[in-house]
Length: 485
Image (tube, rainbow, N blue to C red):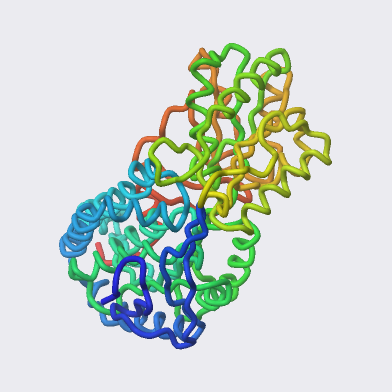
């Protein structure tokens, strides 16, 4: 077993803690202060081979794939209970390695994985795997079977939630899983291996092998991996599709976004702004579903810009461990510089920086943190890079429009189609606009999606869906068996 949650000197391969073959380790730094949080072993391609071999052997043996749905449900439920007992510790760990505010870790990053485990446990137990179909003469059984060995590659902005979003339905379906988290956040994710092992998951069924791009590419290309589940950039998603094509591996891809928030001319800004900002600034703006293109009627542009600017100036930027903080640091110095570079690109393109856009001068230990102030760009044209490319930081771009048709056209004029929102005093009007937006998810007036609805996008935002029954079926294969008349 590992020394602690913050010290993970070995890899979890096939249910056992083993030294990394390449011997590589990474020190994890708190993005707010630069202080050491812990260290973790990183996987090499050889470690990936070991993990896939364990997954393949476990799947082919039927030790988990052949277990009853009730048994799989029991293990997942117990794992959820074990994570829940560690919830305060997990929240602190996520905030320390990611830099998101502690209240977000407590309210989303920890409860959601627990909820996913329980949801898919119940689905594993209750799902109708077999269906008899007849044409009046012949009868077949249409049955659902686990897809096989799953290679799951996850990003740093959901250290525990995104891995669980893939692992929970895959395990519920009876698959064996090799999970490759990123080197930026390699610590908290191992709480999942701790919980599932203690809950009774058989050896070989799960490996958690943090690593860089080489390890991820090796996993994706591995001939013994039947399905790839990936969350990350659209550029990486295209490479994964190409690698999977050679063996027709199944893929689920949740990729980038540049979501549009359409504020209609009848919207009440006193209602809109406090509900919109959390949707734009979650995880310090480092979220694929962030509502960062704010489309406003030209007649109300000045009013909307003033309201947003005032709200952004009121954000508390600082220590993410402080419950009063609303904006923490970027995950890394590289990400901080990338976001700051986009702000300068916006200036060069002709956008006006209304709020933010400067380096922050924070006191004490925070002076070494990787902070970007919440920034508002006005006068943005939808052809600008800051309107078309995913910035992944607390940067909002205000784009003016004339009429609902033009708002829909601007919202759809994007290579992405992941999320979005419509804000209007008239719900029917908002719903009509939402139906015309080419995106996987839309919120009316900031209302949250119901748990169990599908998550995913159109166009370059991905392929397939996660969450809900759709997320479970993504890990199943369909077989038809002719049984006679």
